[in-house]
Length: 173
Length: 173
DNA sequence: TGTTAATTGACAGTATACTGACGATCTGGG
DNA sequence: CCCAGATCGTCAGTATACTGTCAATTAACA
Image (cartoon, rainbow over all chains, first blue to last red; front, side, top):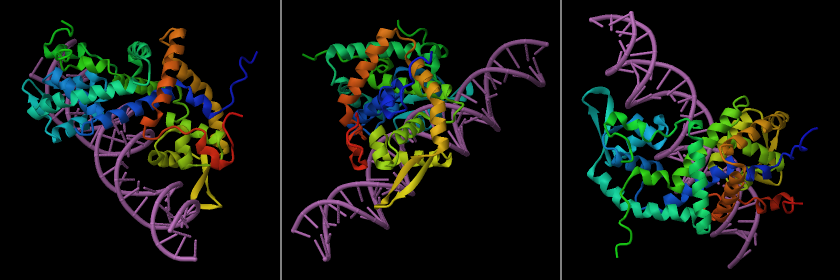
């Protein structure tokens, strides 16, 4: 039997599609982030890169891309912009001439401290329309889904083992 | 009292942030879409535009952007590419010289019919790692959240009232 | 009716994303 | 020690996104 009489080809099918909803929500999230943080002239990606460098001083670009799961090619220009704003520094690694190590500048550390409250307001606002229990449920499911789909993305997250070369040992302890 | 001893500034805070998760999930979704649909050379945005034009023949670019909630500026180049691939046509509107009306070509209608199964596979794959009940729960929450945050996005979705000029009446019937 | 306001499509400029390629460099095997 | 393969940063090319602006055109109002 012809299974379901394949649904009519309609835009309404798109509105309920996971991919469409993820795209919409991402755009809404960026919009809210930029609004709350407009005083700081930092994008979500730049913020994530900054905080990752703060957590792992002396990381290189390739490992940074693994730690935040952002595309390595894209990260090049992100780093350039952060450097142009004097938020980070790049120093050549003494033992490997290919690598450039990333460090926060004083400005970078300062802006990071200052922007945190705005970022937290933004993150809260994204979920605000939901009831508290629903926020928890949504975040729980999303964490699961992103984790279980990790390998499906072009740049899987490698939070821990990207850092072995840094002599940081594991992550948690 | 100083409320909570503000969490340390760490990349771990990013991993749980809604904005970060939405971004990751969107990238995963695009990646899966492109993989399932690589035989068709259509992006998710191009697919959505195509299906919207199919549903509303003779729509113009501005209203199309409202119907799929995509940026109007971006849509210009999307339309150009679809036209270059001979999937859509643009005809000047007789009663308004500013407007160009959009129609699917035969090729466009054909590719749309052919790509649907691949798109459905992609959408299913995005949620596959979750238990069926969790998929439903996640989609329900996401539909709510996107709807309630509609006005927060730069291009709010205006599915129905964008079409009043087209003489289509309401949407559903 | 005539000027202003709003709308439409187009464009310039910036910022992510991803693909694929490239030279410089390091590492391992022989 | 030398070369094959892997890795690092970079770049070119394409596709979304968003901001802001512009000319042409239409609509609205005084």
